[in-house]
Amino acid sequence: MTADVISSPATDALEAGVRRGLYDAMVLSRTYEEAILREYHADKGPGFDIGKGLVPGEMHLSAGQEPVAAGVCAHLTTDDAVTATHRPHHFAICHGMDLDKMTAEIFGRVDGLGRGRGGHMHLFDPATHFSCSGIIAEGYPPALGAAFAFQRRGTDRIAVAVTGEGAANQGAFHESLNLAALWKLPVVFVVEDNDWAISVARDDSTAIPNNADRAAAYGMPGERVEDNDVEAVYAAAGRAVARARAGDGPSLIEVHTLRLWGHFEGDAQGYRPELAEVPEHDPIPRYEAALREAGVLDDGGVSETKERASARVEAAIEFAKASPVPDPSTVLDYVFA
Image 1 (cartoon, helix red, strand yellow):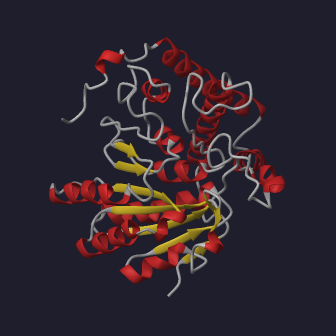
Image 2 (cartoon, rainbow, N blue to C red):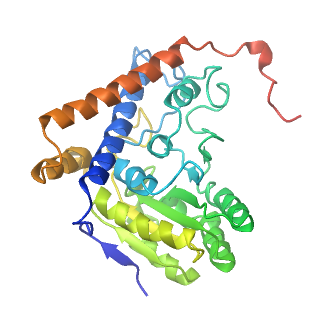
């Protein structure tokens, strides 16, 4: 049994307001990543010193993967739980996380979500029930815990667990799918297939071409969305979320998406033979062109969206820079002894 594969939008009747919302979410996410990219590299020279600057350490940016977060999160409320990966910003933004607190955390400042202790791979936000981790496939088991609590309380809240295609070979992935199906938990599993598990090609690490096919082994529906198409993601996520809210159990969605930039900032990406062709597959200009053709967007609408996103992001950057760094004397605060 193979999963359904969606290679073109199944949403011809999608109303203009929804389409505009998807575009706005994607633009906000990209604008944020471009700003973080700028600030991250601003003071790491001469050369590239990963430990220097306002934002020291590794940085994994989600440019190119915006359709996944926008399409999935359009069906969620902040009462639903989302567990994301080490590349989490697009899902955090699309799920409604406070940009000021998120940015302050990335900058390691006391007004951040974790008071500057966690950094960009460890964003924890009770207000939106969002979490992420640098450990591969780590978000899947905690999503089951949230879903189990929602089920026991008799609510229609759901959990969304996001990981990459490389993590689909981890034990936590398979154990989580099995238990979710066994207990009929309200979970939507999302696999972002960007072709590269750091520097290892999918075909060199995974025995089957589509991870969505693995859903059948656990008795749940599986769908694979090709072409990084936000409206196709929206349609697939709508079916999976409705199923979970109705008490019909988990689903698995895999999206063939795109990593526009490196695995981390400073990654030369010499392992990518297709690197020169990557920019032409950028999903945002493509979707913008489709909305223009459909009469949903015009020059004024595009400018308004981009200006609004830029203002919001730059305000968050300024908030983060104005927040103080943690006092070294508090290094042991908030630590379990």
